[in-house]
Image (cartoon, rainbow, N blue to C red):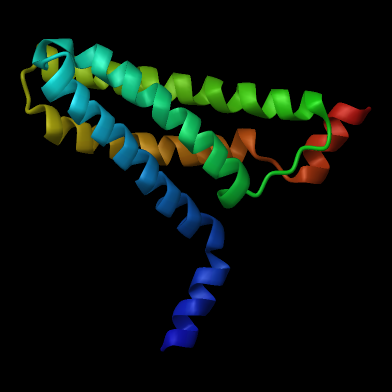
Length: 149
């Protein structure tokens, strides 16, 4: 039984690592959002709390995705910059989706902030995995070949 679990973990290492570090990223985002929302800015500053918590979470996510999830190696400075800008660009896009959804659901429709935060983050995690897998963290050979020609 344990060997089957270990084999599955090896087979799906990338997805398991993404979920693990995505969970940590989400906890950072939620924890910071919570602290800012309830103790610093108050409930009237939903969007500001989201912007700050997402900025910190995006930085954490880049480091962990690059090093541990996709194990991306960039051999040139231009490849690194392209990867970094692509990551931040896609995360900023998903942050706007997050902000828009939270504004609509919490501020306009008056749903409970935490229920919305959980639902919206579920969608954002899936979007971010797809962005990272399909556009940002390509195979090292492909990425470096693009920038050495």
